[in-house]
Image 1 (tube, rainbow, N blue to C red):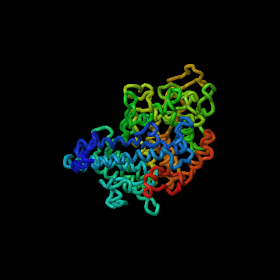
Image 2 (tube, rainbow, N blue to C red):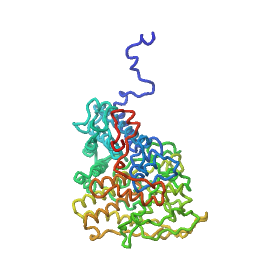
Image 3 (cartoon, one colour):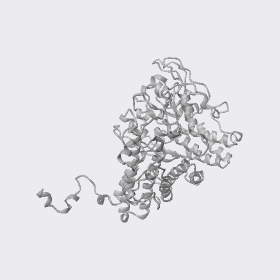
Image 4 (cartoon, one colour):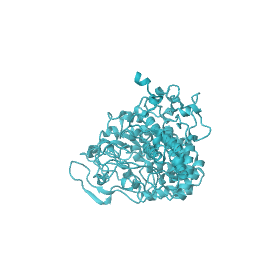
Length: 587
């Protein structure tokens, strides 16, 4: 006691050993370092391989598993916190919700700290670079809030009163300075308009970022425009999205790559089609990495040493069927594609000769078709619990066997890889442009952009016709000079695209063909419903009825109005009582 009381008053102000003080980092180098840390949070998944599927900003759990284009995969006893979302019965105590909430707000905190230090170091940073750094940090803050908004709807917008996106913030000064006091809804339980806050942060980025960045992965103007356009589309505000979409198409310099699959493989990371691409990495030893999207062991088929997570649904596969003219079948969701459910690898199974869009076999791994360069997919012997997770592996999240080693993915613990996540690319923007033109009745312009994607789809098909129909451990007979399936894809004629009904049907199907299994489907259905294009509940309940014939997990499930957003995590409500409240639909 004597030694303490005899000390100077600044005794309690001494910094603990090993902790960096703000005055040390309040300079340009420190600000850049914190900004880099905020960039690392863009993936949203900093806890485990599984975090990439539910806490990640690639939204596979929320956008695909909870929709009709993907299944959790693996086995029923493995990570039930994910597959329960297929049944629409998740409770607020589900740990997936907590991970999503915590990981994304951790990233928001990083962005706010970067903004705080940028302001403190303002005198030591060139004006142009200071503005650019603020734009990058505000983009990250806006994007992460957007990632939370589309999942939870009722969210607090955290700024710590630093670089507030609008002058008339919906919170008091005291609340903004203390994030624990920022509410997620109004006092009467209504939604706070956080959309305009997201828009303002992203608009600042659009207006203050360069058209090109020197460093790969840094956000530029067109990346910000793509995200802002998507934000407007989520609100069915096509008029606000249109100038952004037009600017990207006319001025960004982005081009469709020659091969559809180049938008997913490692060798073509950061290609000329990419607009907003979240960078990933894995150490040569396969150690923990916070920017990896679980694209290696986690999704590798069981036969190849993987865990068999995340598979594409039969409903999505149905969409790739084409008619004799090479166009999508009109009622593809009512007629099931021939598949190997219930057929062991040793039993005979002849794959369907029905014409299909080539993108099918760049999207899924299925029996009798080469699985990249790993060999011919053998069906059940490659699958973990096929009756639970389905029979279609995801190819978009896979890598070539020839890419293993040298920092590339291999049988790494945690499924880490160096495959980036192409959040938005020019192909998405073409689809958005087609929607915009269809809304205005410009069917010819809309048809042009859809057909551009269909022409690209015809450029490359999977080669290797397998003539072995029973897999008993022998080397299969494969003609590598012949296409693996009956691939047919053609463009729409004017007569196929001259009414809003026909145009919308084509655009909705094309969007699924381009993006199946990539975490967008649920949100596309919701925004199309908001725009008056279709009924989300009808689509998902029809899917449940169809796929439940093959996957008993779905039997008895029902998608209702309350399932269009997800419950606020219980931990957030308990940690901030009377501040964070539950979505009224879940009370």
